[in-house]
Length: 308
Image 1: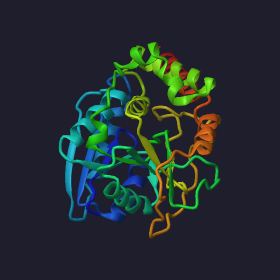
Image 2: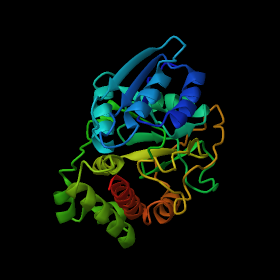
Image 3: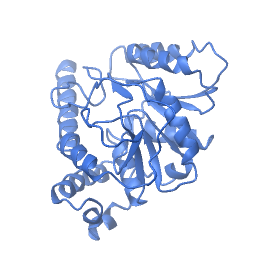
């Protein structure tokens, strides 16, 4: 596969190995690897980071492996954003995977073909692997267009990433001009994203980087491509997860994957699927940010108790 693949890893060798084996099937000729460093107050984390990195040393196909490993812990927000800045200083486009997102092998061909097709079309910012429509097929084509940029397996271009801003400096102006209403229309969605972006603005280097990506895409009025079948499964739920320590509230985690059929059937128009987006807002984004925050606070408090 000619398209570069970017692999974001940290401290979970078990899940990293599973994603690596799928990457190994498609044999990209260039592999970028972004790794965060261990936290000094976490027992055995340095060893787990090293074990995770050792998975990458087993590349056994003709591949240029380019590593960006941090010696210190930057945290999820800084590490992912700075790592992708580095990737896009080297290449124009890439397919991106995290260490707990197992793609269907057909996602790589899907991503590569659409990166080529929409390379110069600034209306499109993201090609996603994830479909959260609970089996509902929203189109007779291979994919549809959405305002939501799912990042559990995705692809994009330097031309789109250039607008990414970890601190979302534009937020105050967006809030003053009430631009979220122009984008979202629905008052409940507006209130949800207003709270979300305000929390990011108040703590931009916290636990998330992807809401900032959504913000960047919306500020450019761009759309995402969503496959008509789900092409990725997140297996990252667990005690050592960064965000999701349980899956009780998150029905969109660990969804089974299906193969994409080829040749792709391209829509003859670029129009957002409103029905699909309403479903996504009601299911995925009804309380996700708040629940993630609660999960993170719970982990911090539990770790504090153990340390004391």
